[in-house]
Image (cartoon, rainbow, N blue to C red; front, side):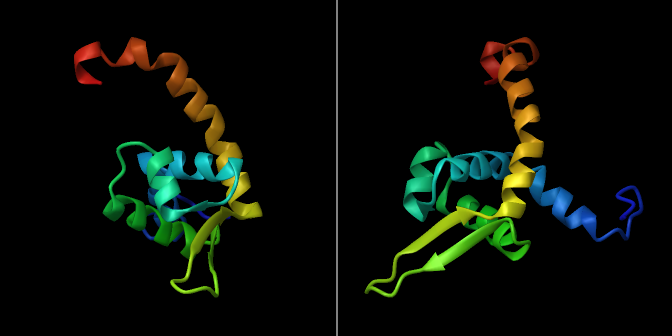
Length: 112
């Protein structure tokens, strides 16, 4: 068991990735079905190509998302959530639900 309060804890890197705003949205989108890159960009409105790439790379590296490259030309790349990623998404779902329920109370209309 890692102690995330310790500065050298390797779990901190994963925590940093999971705590990102795009990570929660990308994992949640992938729960519905596998998506191609541009489909994800459409579903997660407002994310740039650069941010989506920066979100997907560590998710794939940590085994939360699977990247499948097709054999056709040009190759199609599809992203899907792994069983480990489903567990992470399930853990993050209550946080996302809480945010949906309370965003209006926390953020005044002009800050959204």
